[in-house]
Length: 247
Ligand SMILES: NC(=O)c1ccc(NCc2ccccc2)nc1
Image (cartoon, rainbow, N blue to C red; front, side):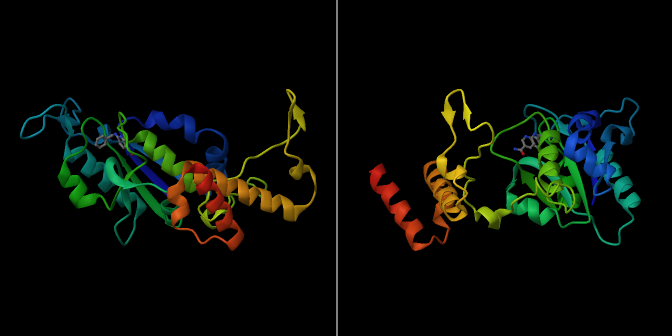
């Protein structure tokens, strides 16, 4: 997969993409990430990339020309015969989910457009942006951190990126439930024991315990996730008991 990131601060990406799993994925050529500095494409003498908003109001807006030319340069180099999926990171976008990550992980190439200030000129969004995505209901100083989050979530899904031990368990594995608690050695730590079922070697009991933990945790923290789920009879019984306790 080719990832191209249009940003005013390419150096922000050196840490996350120069470390650990994302770095190894690039070394193994499973993903090719390149950042482009939008400012390099500004034609005005002072390399200005923002201006006052028409209609007045606080803040500045990123001007269209540098972004347009940067995007054109990147798409030329990608040498595609159809427009490249271009993701604009914005609080107005559709909320990013694991499902969306799995969908994007199938793409051959992706362009990320990171805005700053109050955002970018709408004509760029109308002409070039194919997907406007938000990583959550909060406002950040720029689209760079959301771009890193999304590239991280996508990259780990690319076959070969995670070792078999660390291999991801996709949505269907936990079927939309929150994951059960994890324990490892030592068996007693600061006087705290590991749940005995996990030491029993009885994998039927272990799976049952983990499933129950997932359902209880999801009931407590994300009852919305429970709504859309098909539970087995005994599992629905667990939920009914939890609901009674809550009354
Ligand atoms: N929640 C998010 O994903 C997100 C994305 C970008 C951002 N800040 C940059 C920006 C501000 C206003 C308009 C467009 C972009 N903050 C949060």
